[in-house]
Length: 403
Ligand code: ADP
Image 1 (cartoon, rainbow, N blue to C red):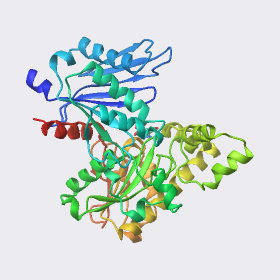
Image 2 (image 1 turned 90 degrees about the horizontal axis):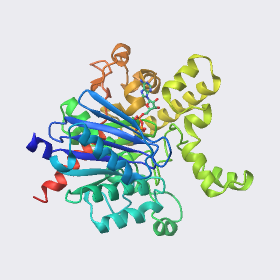
Image 3 (image 1 turned 90 degrees about the vertical axis):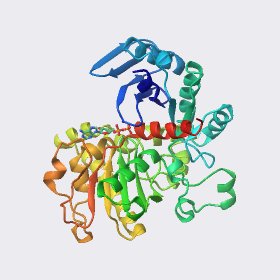
Image 4 (image 1 turned 180 degrees about the vertical axis):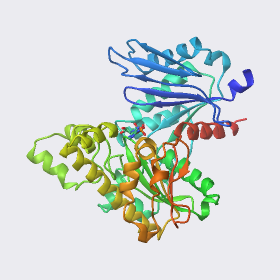
């Protein structure tokens, strides 16, 4: 127990009002426990903690992230994993924006904390929340190395033509304006798994990955290196998402300010929280959207059609950018669980070598699998993402260098 426990990494994904966490062994991928603290700062905050086969749920007022993480540690101890006593190898933190500065998993010290705080200008909704998790974990586990793994890192080396916005270059340089891309940990992990599943070296594979969760992004990857991605300076750009619109005419922002008299924070809220599927149909959850479509809700149907239309537009763009692909892969909540989205996204593309086998697509399997007929030129795959495992492995690689 002792040695195995000490090899484990605690992965923390700290959001504005939640902390998701997982304690796992990066070598064997075995998860010892996981859970979520929700509604931090509200009266009805709660923790749901899963260890082995049991789930512990508690509703209790949690004032801030430190109190939330303290409750996580107490719950670990009460369910057989005293983290302070057992020890953990490292804590791995998901950090959304690494800017131009961080593009590798990074050992956290006071300077790194200060720089992540500075980058909050680029990610005001995310980086402060990530930092709250980092500060709390450093205070509660002072002797344990803490590692930041950045959502933007994988896309740091995007080709200049793909990462540059066509605006005044001096303005862009002064304000760090470029395409950064997000969900990088997922795109990197999933594209690596695709090469494994195809039994080929990553350097030989051209592929497109669709990460379709509540947030959604696409990436074009040539020989293991990303050459384009749909999210931009912020996670707003690209595909239609649960509550974000994806691509918009930027003129809409000025028009809203002038005509609807919205200030910049109201526009930010409109675009981040009240747009996308939710803005069009009233709901952001895909399962609810489907129920509404099935019951004849026209707004829900239109939302779905806009979602698929955007997805296919990116598919077409990336097919051309890559000059053809070996694999197209779907991942995350919607990508892994919605056969209909996968079928509609790729419908009518047999002339490009892209086909989906209806039976393979409909199989409710939860493992990585091919859903195209075996003899078609383009492999269409479903690959469950595992950002926690990728973060844990990255954190372990960093601490191994310290030994
Ligand atoms: P995030 O991590 O971005 O919050 P997830 O990757 O967990 O999101 O994906 C959440 C989305 O996945 C929601 O829209 C949810 O409705 C959708 N989803 C989950 N399960 C299913 C399912 N069985 N069928 C269709 N959509 C699903």
